[in-house]
Amino acid sequence: MIKSYKDLEVWKKSVELVKEIYNITKKFPKEEQFGITSQMRRCSISISSNISEGKTRQYVNEYIQFLYIALGSCSEINTQTIIAKELNFIKQAELDLLSEKIDHVSRMIRNLIKSLRH
Image (cartoon, rainbow, N blue to C red; front, side):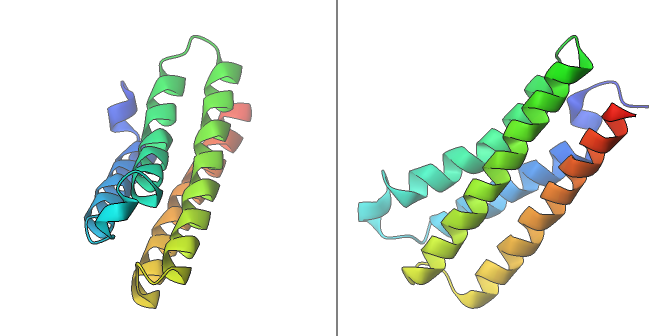
């Protein structure tokens, strides 16, 4: 029984993604602290934050709107990881791992949206 956003598997996976992003961005150059490091961290946090905020909304359509915002943040973080790889801040293996996790969270969000619509 889902009583809270904390019970949602998609929320749990998105929090795991945040931790992964924080661990990876720790190794980024110090001059990127207020650049891509900050952007990637804020973006990853946005995913779980919008899932939780949407879950607490009164109407299903509001919830779905917040899930779409979370989905947009998944696209943003995906692009940012590609840029980080292009800048040689992360290795291909790290990019592959992050891409897989982001894709998994994105699919979970899409499936949640579908289930809420029906």
